[in-house]
Amino acid sequence: MLSVAHPYFEYESTETLTKTIGDYFNALLIQSSYHDRGFDFDPEFSPIYSKDWYFERFNALTSDLLFLEDEDPAEIFFKQYETFINLESDLPLPLLPVKGFFGVLGVQDAARRWLFGLLDTTAPQINSLTIPQRVWLFGNIFNNISDQPEMILTKQMSFRNPHQRGYTSNYRRLEYINGVDHHVTLVGDLMDYHRNQDVHPEALRCLQQTIDVAKQISTEETFEEYKIRNIYQLLFLEIHQMILNNTLIKKCRHCHKYFTVTNLNVEYCDRIVEGETKPCSEIGSKRAFQKKLEEDYPLKIYNRAYKTHYARVKKGRMSKAEFNTWCTQAREKLSQARVGTLSATDYEEWLKI
Ligand SMILES: [Zn+2]
Image (tube, rainbow, N blue to C red; front, side, top):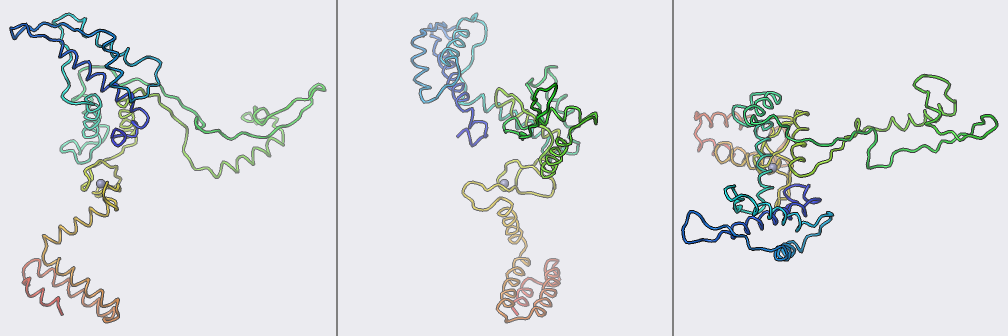
């Protein structure tokens, strides 16, 4: 269920499920720790659960999950529970969440707010602004309560893809220095290449071969890696990148999900929605045309007659020239029928010829 929501959960569902169960369990325990003393306004708060009792229940609830962390999650959530029950009584205790996954749902809602406020090309009023203008507006209107950054994370940059073994040269050259053999590598030989000095001809030949390989490569620039701790950070990072790339988005008129657009006139995405065999772009435009046909009776009968006549051409019962003449006339009469100078019945009659 989670992995449908975002690919992140294919890797991190355990953490999310544990947190959902742990938060909910703690809220339940705290709720049930109030004991009515007979008068409504000041119920007695007396937590009764021991550590053993807690661990037994928590482990039963999470028995299907496989934990990789060093620390026992039961320990983590029991500590949270203890913190809550040891608080001074006038501090607010966590309320029972109305539904599970409220943490993840909160993040989803934040992402929706970001997308709508910053990038959605159909957002009323604000869509007349540029993306940088919208970022300014968003930062000042929706987010002006603190000067804290949205998040801090570690970024690693490299020339080579950190997850692939790069090109390694087999180049080895023997050199005699003071009568001793030295093995020289390509990197060693090219050490002074930037100074244009004294590079061994063999190394230059090898370099040229490598340049020829490089010419075949069409991938992009340098590599960037980010260390994220949760889905919130991942989504913020994704949206931040979209802002930097001026990515425009809108909701598909068929599946109502967001998709990126370069041409603002495009109304449908290329997803294949569950239960369909064709992408929204095909289904949607077909349906829109059908709808137009329903609303436009002269167009509907023109379209029907067009198909009949076209079939005649295919079967050789009508020449292409005759068909073209028919088309021109049929379109002229279509305009007349649409404005009412030709009645729909007369038009229908004429089309039957
Ligand atoms: Zn769609």
